[in-house]
Image (cartoon, rainbow, N blue to C red; front, side):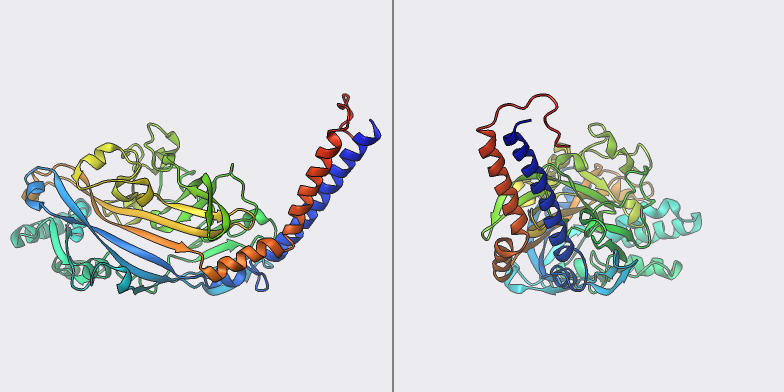
Length: 460
């Protein structure tokens, strides 16, 4: 080995060692969940996000009931500011894990909304009725007969007209009230967000990153579980990744990022899409690829989300009845974006667009901090003919859109300025500058060195 070659490899070894030690020290100090770390306060008290609700108003219910195609018109947004501080924070196992609750509080924002949700009317699927009709086979013969006769005698329709506020936050439903008198465990009230204002999604235990920075923010348990039991495969029941609010530092473009979404009762993965810039901060955009909700025919790993096993829907939709008390609820992207065209074509008024209906996360790769986030999801119900209910005899089985949400959060100007300063002045920058110096040093010497002979790569 020549003296120049030796210098190159020695420099490379020293640089690599210093780089690893330098980055490890900074990560341990700044990017672990301890009460003294820089990330702790923003993790415990994150900035508010904005949640927009859009509804699909049904314009021709009589046509659909006669066997034709339903037509819908999108109305919204009705916007709420969402606060989600972490409460009851308790560090466990020598600071390697942390327990927390994450209650959500919703505050209506009229200036970002199209109207007053307590005044505006929407015609949508009668969700309590459809849910009960779907559950009737599990009732006793006596109860099934009484409920069926009651529904038919009152002439309760498949579509209901309510204020936006009622559909979201709840109203006393006459059918549920009747059922409650026979089954007290049934709530008389219904709302898509009923009892969700001020409540949390469950008890979480997170890894703090103290032992391994790659575990920073990952979920250890949810409601005491390390895996779920709803789905039909072990892989589908796994609780993977973070809750979507934090990610480990030093993210690269080739990795998949995993998020557990309690609303979906499952974990999903995000893949790199492109480099973006947000308020002067360079970021990587990650988004769920199409294979996340792809039909098991095209992505066999999704077969585990078919319950019972083999009972599968098409691409772009996920049936979540197993974790929604049996209600025939299906989740998708808004307007069935990335879904089988059959679902889109079954309803007039849908127009999926990537820029309006895709979910994504923009992450600053060095720190792993989300700079901008957009979470979009649509709630649908399966409508079909039900034996014993004559009014459903002509309808075509349809995955019917109810509403979709668009949750947005972008780093504020003050935090963006702090982030830019952090990236320039933090000790994190020193290992990165060291890496650049080492790279330049080696490139300079390689230009003047002879090719290495076999075995010359070792300095031992």
